[in-house]
Each structure stands twice: as structure tokens, then as C-alpha cells.
Length: 250
Image 1 (tube, helix red, strand yellow):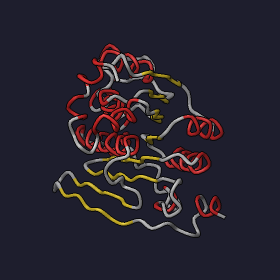
Image 2 (cartoon, helix red, strand yellow):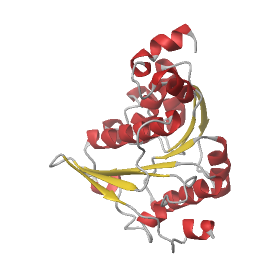
Image 3 (spheres, rainbow, N blue to C red):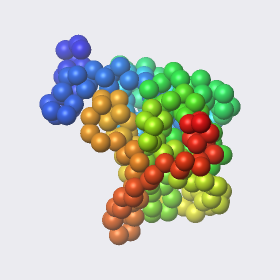
Image 4 (cartoon, one colour):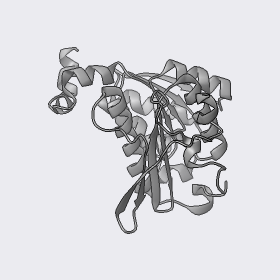
């Protein structure tokens, strides 16, 4: 590591769980972020500031004024520009050491598999079940860890699925059939800090996977209720009859 990197990341390096070895792994890490909205925005900012070496930002949308309430990577100057271009510009001002690739279109499933095979972790910050299921299948095929998060109204959840481990469940073990597609921010609303909380938790899980420290949320689901400020953790077992990971296993 350079003297600049040692100084920049000194507060993390002094943590015994991270140390120089862990920080070097983070700096060498490659992460794909699918969705640069409420969840992807804070996740991308904290991953870049923490020293992740390479980020691939994927989103096919443009910045609208309603996004600015919660998607903190964008500003008023970003209106009507692509979210990935806006995100790249913000990150480069924060940490020029992080390499950024952008994809300003919706990926097909085979393209998701290709991306998953070229990164160390995929962070799912999307808002629909069709894309989440496709990302789950892609990560299963590429054997790439998937950090999944969701937030709506004043509630959120997060989990980690790691197909490198034979005992790890997958996203479809948690949601077998998909829920009401109307459950999104546009239809139901969301309090601004809610996506920030879940997005930064996703960033934390990515760093744990890259740096190989701590206990990632594999086989666990955390639900967060902001109204009561309660956090509940549930064990999630692998579904041997899962249509996604069950078929991969056999």
C-alpha cells in the first residue's frame, strides 16, 4: 500500500479485525452494484470511501427530482442525466483511487452472469422481484456472493447469499414466489434515512466479505423496523427443493 492509502484508510487499518491485510483485500476488491437508487447510492459512497478498488455501477434510469429525497449520490446538478454517470462523478470527487465502470442499461441474465463472474461480490439494490430472481440465478451460476437489501415505508431487510458455501440458502429460498410488485417506493413511499440505513448495512456486509473478517449474514435475515427502532434476526435454512439453488446443487 502507498503512504497515501495508509493515511487515508488508517482508521480502518487500526481495527485488529481489518489491519493492513484486510485493507489490502478491500483495495483489491471488485464489486458490482445493481441499481443506483436509494440503496445503491449510500452503498456505493461508503464502499468507495472505504477503499474498494473497483466498482461496476449498473442502472438504466435517469435522475429525477423525486430521487433527491433519498438517493444521496445525486444532486440537483444531476437532474436528467444518467444515474450511473452522476454516481461516477460523485465517487471520483470522493476517492479518485477507486476505478469506476458504468453500465447505463438493463442487463440481460447472461450479462448478469458475465458480470458476476468478473467481480468478487454483487450488491443487489434493485426494486423488483424479476431482477432480483435473475441476479440470484446469475450469482448461483458464477458462484459469487450476493448481498441483498430492500427498504420500503419505514421497514427494511438485509441478507447475504454465498453459493460458495454448500449450506448457504439463496434469495429464492427466502422468497419462493415473489410478492406484490406494487410494493415499491413509488407506490408506497419510504422515509429517506431508511434506504440509507439498509444501504450502508449492505456496504458493511460487502466489506466483511472482501476483507474476510467478521460474521457475514449468511443464513440469516435481519429485519429493521424504524418506527420502533427494533431489529430482529431470523435464521434462514437452505431449501433443498428450491427451484434456483436446488437445481444448481443437483
